[in-house]
Length: 489
Image (cartoon, rainbow, N blue to C red; front, side):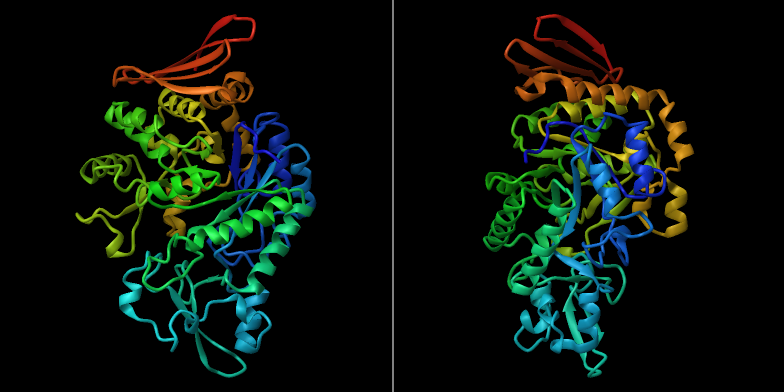
């Protein structure tokens, strides 16, 4: 199947009304006919942590959300995108629980990376660890095997707890390959169309490297799983937060990639009141990308924009965002911070809030996103012009909760009446329906206090102009009968 060049929605299974049935109700009422590109449902599986990103299995849906029937119902009218965390699985999964019981005698033992698979004597070497791109202080956790009482250390890239809830999978193991094939085959049976390979950049562990996007081994894995996915008529979307050059290498290999640079560039465009950097970026990026402004994590900074941004300028952008209520995710490894100590990994915020809840600026940002080549994704909080949920951050201690508010059906009703949301709906429908977006894209030369983006397809065109002085946007467009119109966003 081909990915549709239409707008997609990103949402948790319980964030629009409480479960998958209310999500479908919202899609069939408030969002009817809106998200023609599909629905990315963030992990709906049984999970032991990280808001679904520590799945126990991919063969079930968490009963708190619904079941596979609910997913298939949504899939009758929308292409559904689900996540596969190829790097790890939950400590509470039946696979790891049996390993904890029987150790290396378990039939699932080879799914996991015990340290003797990395270091011959099983003892970690600090100079090797120092080279790694760490997401926690050490890349392993220690467990006790119940049947023997022995301690066993296994690789755990992610997780705030010790031991971690997220146990890495050994993708070199045939047992892991068989398990991934089982999961993908189930996705096919449930009508899933697109699978995001979450955290795929971490799957290769190799001494002497950062253990992140290790070449050429990463391509060998991607070739294998891409061949499998193609046989099941599934599209894959690798998710890699990395130096932009790595993203471009993925694109050169024919993969879809995420545009993790665009959200920052658009923020910078409004905060610095200059389109120079944004225009330069848009002239040179690959077109086979999924675009986003906001998501369940934050606006990427490092390492995604390494060598694209001056850290002194980046600090100014970050400071403005923090003044507007954002909080920050920071780089753990000293070796992967900037030489001057700049360590911001992501800016966590509602995109509407970080643009000062300015309707015109927010809609201009969305218009830019929709005009940039690629498949646009709109996060559910952004769809409802939600603001920073600072209370959730205070109550949970989790900074990412700032942009993860769960909307009740009553709250959705209220949000849908907001002028900014109604204007955004109209903009989405325009993006879905104008045929010029299947044509040729160009950046029109303009002054630095404005931006002009153009799509042409034969005689049909649509041109976006954004004026930084008043933050207003206008689209001039034609139809196949050469009728010209003006759309004031």
